[in-house]
Length: 593
Image (cartoon, rainbow, N blue to C red; front, side, top):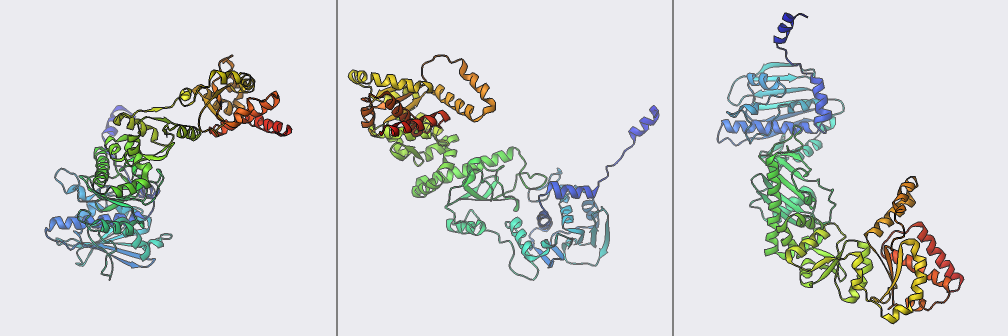
């Protein structure tokens, strides 16, 4: 092609051609989750038509939507809104992506009281019907028209006699979509998507609307809100939290049972009174999994599928508003009805702990009610504030092992091995100035009493022979006095020993990597033992084995006590240790001990 020809071609204007079949595939398989949404789109269009008529005719308040069914075959969806003129039909129904609502503001933006935004919602009706018939009569007068659209992108338009003001959408069930044309399914979808709509949605010939607009949350009593929550969610909720902020209105209900943090669905979140999503992931903070919410928003932006919110500054502000409303309500409970708050905390301590970790105000509000596991049982933050000095340990098995030791000595040990407890205890110590410190494994001697010189001399031979048994396990023996007396041994290790035990256990389980793991031990050389097995001189069994003269019997007893101490401390046993325990027990049985 020559230069002149190319210049000519470059200057020629072409227009995109829309493949409607391809658009329908995108709608049904990618944009929308199921054909259910066709009724949501019809509700949206009906509400917007009524809203437009209200704007054009101030004082008019008779808006309604009426649905007529020929069961399993046909549906007529009629609103008595503004209707469409012939010009508007050509402009808005024949152009994909063009929404009539976008032209109502001088700056080209869509008014906040309109639901529709993208101008493609009507196409979703092709998922359940092979044709879309629209009969419309403009409220301001003019020719009534019938528009018929087909999936191949063609449509017809013909005049009608003057009819009822508004618009009727007539759908005929296509094969496989018949269930959407029965009353039961229509009722379900209307109540699901349109429960909060400001105008009634009726079945033809009936007086009661399918959607019952709830009472104002701002003026409703607690019992009314709880009754509404029970009707909507089928739950007898523990507490109700009204939500009224710049972006949100509605109510949050507190579940009457513990729930998993991953269970964040089951909400009813509306945009301009039309259901948007049941998920609260984008709107609510992660700790809100113990709530079920009925919320409406006017100003947030939906995604193209209208099944979630668009991430922007307004959404972030709405999140902060929601968290603040929940916090303020719980703070009010703590001041006016602390027993209700205490009952709530008993059920949802874990969720409230997750809130208190990141929010200092919530921490101060809840810490007195939050429970923690200690050597003296479950104690609240309020009790810990008065307890004075305390020690905390992160390992739950280690806590269980040391609990009787601390209890017998009258010292307080706090278990911080549960989710959020470590952060909260640190915060409690820092903000309230409490002497709470972590217990390092190599500091365990603080709770163990040193033996006398005579006792050490008496135990010298025993410890020498016990050390030979324990040496292959990077462990040495010591004698101490500690309570309770019925605990014969206590196994302690530092961080290096804990790491080596984990590596050795992995080496036994993962034969493919045994050579690589073995290299971790190659450079250790003859280092000092990393773990200690403390024999309790207050224990009758320990005092008796100190006098054993049979070296083989002594070896068997030490083997059994070593493995017993590992089990008591919650340490996983390696294969060699299991064999050693079995050999020790068999040896003792063979000697009649």
